[in-house]
Length: 153
Length: 69
Image (cartoon, rainbow over all chains, first blue to last red):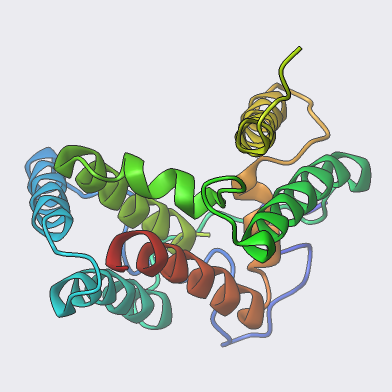
């Protein structure tokens, strides 16, 4: 069994490996100061974006920029990627499938009924929680970090 | 006994399902677990390029849905 994330497939000579990708960027910044600067920059960005008025151009640009940056990184300078599992256990994965299917069914039924406040959708419940600036900014920061985690996959 | 409002039932349903996801993730992180973590099954879905594109698109959509509108 291959443990290098290549699934035991042999690479063609001269062909770059897809997994783990050519490590253009290390997993962590080389210097703690750089890591602190990046963290501070992301926190400031999330704080500024969190102040944007919903449905405004600023709010749209605020989510467009992280999407564009991470898309550019995913397409261009891919960071060192975490090898995915060769296969998933069917039984183990079925638990996730059941829970996720139930969640989407519950959300779809609330959305179809469209009778707020009697059948609130997940969004209806989350939106009020996003009211405080600090909470919204923290959620944006988590969202950006989740995007970075996905790019590394 | 007063009837349970449908709003409470709906919220309870979401609470139970989100709690179930958290429990699954905790169980998946135990050594030798057959349950994959979120990162593992997302990584598996992202093996093909189309899967990678769709998962990243879903991530961006979540940001737009909750933060921009």
